[in-house]
Image (cartoon, rainbow, N blue to C red; front, side, top):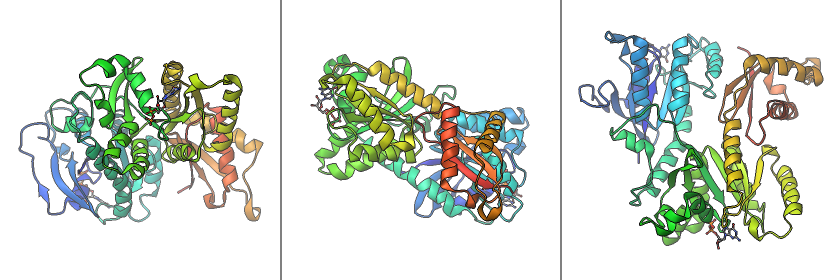
Length: 462
Ligand code: GDP
Ligand code: GDP
C-alpha cells in the first residue's frame, strides 16, 4: 500500500524543485491526460524505504484565464482531495504572505494530514520565516532546502509513521464490506466524486482492554435494529471503521474490537491488539478510552490514555457496565479522583459512566466527545495570550540561572488539534520543566481547555 502526497503552496516557493528531488528520474508526466489530474504533475517518489505517489500543483504562473487566486484555490482543493497527505510549502526567506494564509485556510478545513514545510531554509536567511510559519496554525514547520537536499531525513521521519498507518488500514480494510466507508481518500482518488465542501466526519476511536465492551458500545450506537436484523448483521465487526450520524453528528468510528476479533482468526491476538490501538489512535481525533467499571484504570487502560495524550488526541474516559455497579455515587467520586491522580497529563479530562448494554449514558458520552473535540480545536487570540502571559510572569517570574533572568517576550498559538503554543524567550534551554508546567496548567485553566493535550514550545528569538 502506498499513499499520495500532494505538494501545495504558492508559486515560486520551490515545489517543483522538491518534486524533482523526490521523484528523481521516475517522473511520469500525466499533464495531458484528461480527468481530475489534468493540471497536476504526478510521479513516483522514493524517500528512504518509502515509495509513494507525489503530485505537484506547480505551473500556475502561466494562468491566464482565471484569476491566479481562484485557480490556485481550485487546483489546491483538487490536489487536497486526491492526497492522503499534503505537504504545504512556504518560502522561509520571504516569510508568511497573504497567499500562504489562503492555502493554510484551505488545508486546515479540508486536508486530513498536513505537513508544513519552510523551504529555502539553508543558511541563516530562513530563520525568521521559519518562526513566522508557526502563525499559520499548522504546527511546527519543517525546515527544508529542496535545492540542497536538507531536511529530507526529517521529512522521512514525519511520513514514515503515517505511511505505516495507511498500510495497516488498507490491510484491515481488505474485507469485502460494501456499506461502510473504509477509505474515504481512496474513493476520492478514483476520481468518482470530489465534494470539497462536504464536512469531514469527526473521527472517533473506542479503545479499551478486551471485554471492556467496545463491540457492545459501537453496536449500541449504530442501532440494534440494523445489526440484529439487517442483512449486513455482524459485518461491521470486520471493518476498520464505520461511518454514521451519531445524534446528528457525522462521525467515523474506528472499530478496534472488530479488528481484534478478526485477528483471533489468524491467531495473532496479542500482537494485533497493541498495534490496533496504536493505529486507531493515530487516525482518531477523539479517543474514547473505555473502562470496565469492575476493574477500572488497569495498567493497560492507563497506557492507552497516555498514548492518546502523546499522540495529541482529544480524550474522553468512559466507564462501562455502569448498570452492574451497586454503589454508584461513591464509585463515581473515587473514579474521578483516580483519574486526576493517575492521568495528570490529561487534567480535567471528562469521565462519563455508561452502559453499553442498556444505552444509558450514551447521550452524555456524545456530549463529552463533542466538548473534547471542541476544546481540542480551540484557538486563543494572540492579544489575549500576551496579556495573560504578562500576568503569569508577574505572579511567578521565570527563573534566573546565573543571575540572568530568562525573558519571555511573546507568545502565540501555533496550532490547534491539539492546542500548541510557542513562547519566544531568551535562553529557552535554561527554562526548567516546572515553569513550562506552570504555563501549561495556567493555559488549561484560564482558557478553559480541560482534558486536552497542550503543547508548549520555547523558542529563542531569531
Ligand atoms: P514552484 O513554483 O513552487 O514550483 O518553485 P520552483 O521549484 O520552480 O522554485 C522557484 C525558485 O526557487 C527557483 O529559482 C529555485 O531554484 C529556487 N529554489 C527552490 N528550492 C530552493 C531552496 O531550497 N533554496 C533556495 N535558495 N532556492 C530554492
Ligand atoms: P470488547 O472485547 O471490548 O469488544 O467487549 P464486548 O463488547 O465483546 O463485551 C464483553 C462482555 O461484556 C460481553 O459479555 C458483554 O455482554 C459485556 N458487556 C458489555 N457492555 C456491558 C454493559 O454495559 N453492562 C454489562 N453488564 N455488561 C456489558
